[in-house]
Image (cartoon, helix red, strand yellow):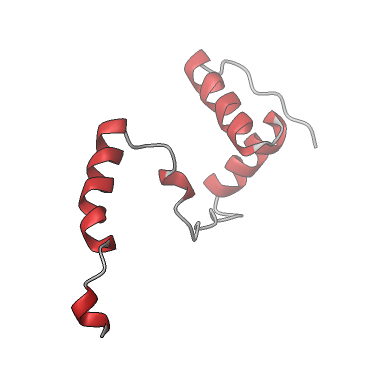
Amino acid sequence: MQTTIRGIPEDQEDALRERARRSGESLNRTVVRLLREAVGLNPPRRKRDLSALAGTWSQEEADEFDRRVRRSEQIDAELWR
């Protein structure tokens, strides 16, 4: 089946194209998948990883995390005797 949709606002088209680019899918495949999800035919798959968080921290946040974790990386020699 082929359907034409007219009047898609530019910001929505940009968002669809960006989503297709990020997922590595064609624009058509992305739109079809999103429509299936929207009408309940293909519920969105739940990710089981942290990929959505990758690259979201600022440099300051990453430095703060490293600083706080550094303490837990120290080995207490007394505990390992």
